[in-house]
Length: 525
Image (cartoon, rainbow, N blue to C red; front, side, top):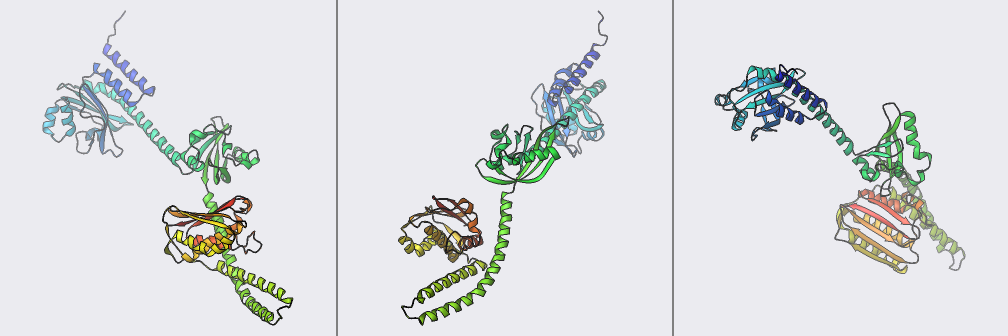
């Protein structure tokens, strides 16, 4: 058996191979640093090793790893300015620095805080080499010893190879950190996007789910991951071509842009979504699912419909005002003429009954004309501070005699004093109109309950026990001239809504046939 003629060289080669293997296996910068610290002292004297990196502007140096056989004073996280320091030539030009008497160096450069700190750790000499990536210095590696004069040229030469491997580990760490940072950045964008961003696999199951999807649909990720996407379909679309329309088009064309559809939320609400979808493929080009970006446009669609409705109402208003003015004067003349004819008839004349019916119809037409004019006029509320409970109670007094005859039991519940900015006269018309509808909906009597709830928008809830409204008619009641009454003009509720809109409020209705109706009015406080 022959002995190794250069055991130190063999050990050196073995260490370099081990470092290389460690890096290639994907070990972290910290693991590579620990290996070098634990194994390198066979070849080079040191009691402390540290690695420092520059910032992107190359203005400061930051220690990213440090280890010593004693207490570490100058440790991880410490930073210093490069300009004017003894390390500047290493960073700017890639030079090596040897200080074999740190105490003497500190006496000559008392402003060197880093030297003072490692001297406090008991170090007496140091060897510093630049870390090069692509030939460009990006940091330094420090070797420090408790022995003065510890470092010789052969140590510097020997460490060049080791520091080169450390540079590879640093570069890899930087790449991984950069990739992780970009990945986290993109994940943060995707996760916190206000739009729903999720992935459906080839079996139509949810594979990923962001916070935007949670906000829009109401489901947390744990509630939908692995579940069928049919969960979001409205009942009437399940089992129909609509259920697979997006999937079919995406698989055919590779994408679908801005498709509008109605979907169901966790709490049962129907929302209008604008969905864009892209086909996902594996490396062999086979479809494996589709990504989706969905935006809730329910409010936007409602605003568009409201704009169309408002524009239509403006046209109707102009036409109504014109027609009303044209009709009002002739009606007054007809009414006056018929009254003159009636006065000239004997009291027992049978024609008096016909004349009375004519006058009744003329008065009805006159009432319609007044409603038309009220509806056509622009509304500019005269704002003042008023007590909402007093406003509601005052309106009820106007109908109390009629309600008493109809055995209507009225109650007003206010949680707390509630004062708002509003037009007292116009709001009184709102309450009177809504109360009138409730009274007429309960011909046999019943309970009419009003509840006032303060808040950013004060709410008035008017609940009756009447016949209710057919579900198909609930949205139509706000349209001009739509009425279910035999003698109604169909302008009462549209006028009420116009008043509420002028107060920057909102009004809506919930009703169930044979079980009553609830009107909700919200006015900002």
